[in-house]
Length: 72
Image (cartoon, rainbow, N blue to C red; front, side, top):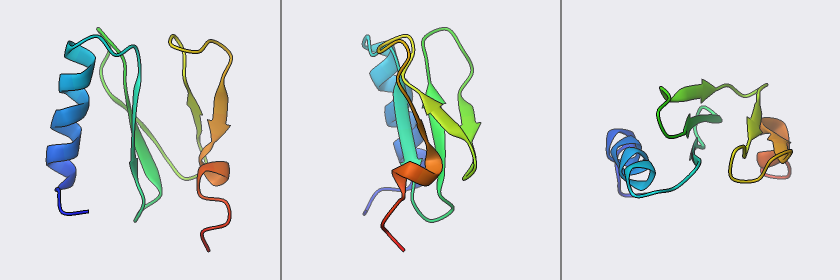
């Protein structure tokens, strides 16, 4: 909670650089996510979008609505 979003994005890039296959960074206030994968530009996923864990877990997806289900 004390880190900035810019700091969080930087950390996502570091995790990818150190071998993570996919990184989801969830921003709870606008209910968005930023997805990092090696050798790809980060992708923003909006509140109506779907997150995919490929290539780390092929076939695993979750909607952003399900990520935040029950928090209202």
